[in-house]
Image: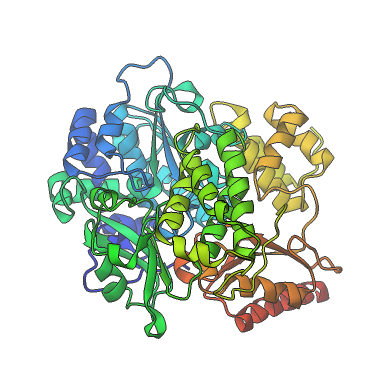
Length: 437
Length: 166
């Protein structure tokens, strides 16, 4: 069971119903459940989008695109059916927040999907969960069936004359499918390779129809925006960064866990006060602020507010909310290698700069870590990574390249310490295979 | 149609293809659910699923080779998947994997001679704040130590023996 961690600074908005048995529909209804959908029905499409824009809610998947704006891009008239697609393919290393939502408050995801559907007059939504989350799929399927039984889904929802269906879907193991266009391909029964954009999914998406695609946390937040009111929700966060988010603390930290904190919460405070600091009195070396794709920050760079704009200004990204803490004993070359091994495994192979780049970077980093590298390998790693940027259909290539560039730039000394046949000075014994794997 | 699946699963598949605007959308879930029941995706299974979703066998094979959970060879009754991605690595994920290799006497992607266990090093499974973690089939096991993974493996072994004794 995945449970929420708490601290006096936590602000329960998305986690308002966590730990209260809200997966049960009666309990959910007791806790103001499905009131937001009724409000949204009364507001109508324009009213819903206005409320969403006022909330300053930005996409929790990682890119931070304003949700209300995204919904407003869906054309009012469309010859093809419109769809809502919920991205629960949570697989960004360092991120384990959607699990909590799906386990503890599945009806919030359903209600958010209904509201998203109402905003664009769609009649069908899909909730896609990664294949490994089977127990969550079972919870979600039960919740969807209960919502049908209550008349909240299906024909004439809430007696409003509007029809809306939800289908749940399982993946079968693929990080790349968390990318919006690959997600649509997967749902259409194909390999999850990305589509070129434009056209964007809001215009040509699932089955060729206009499609809203949002992260599960974004969708689960939507009912709370209507529960509190858009303007009130916005006030919790910082400028242009409304509300709270679920931060996942992991790695070398005393109290790892998922904590709901206001947007803009100070990262240093998050690590030392909320997370209890570094175990064993060790020093901090680095922090990955938002999942493996985001460039790591040094110990001197963490006195910043955790919102999309402030982390962006610090040269990284807020990403998916996965805060990974590294103490002074961590070998940054080994960490860079493990990160790259992941991207090389997950690259779908469609775009050559990503397919070849991740593999060569994995090989170069392996050689460096094992002690067989030469001087120019360090610059080659950076050069190779820089040349992947912006040259692929989807952001996976960038996600592999950006952290690598930061590792080399900020911890170059550690890379140099591995040269001249010395191997890892941190004496990490785990051997990596040079080829294959 | 004649089917390789249990009546319950066949009925589920009959319904599954009707849920989407196109039948093909049922492909990925159908492959996974079929594998859960029959163990792995062998040729006749692929042929039946291709027919059910209206795709060619080649198209189905292309999809199978993309998804890491889908397999065309048998795994153990209990498939032990140890995460070694960043959050788990920092808290001893590699040690858990090495421990499993030794304990089970098999390499990564190996199957024990009795077919009871198979082992796989996997990418992030969404248990970062409770690392290191592993999944055995679909069950999560978190905050692992070498001693606790021993207990997890022993529990599955006992469960299997209890099942066999019945």
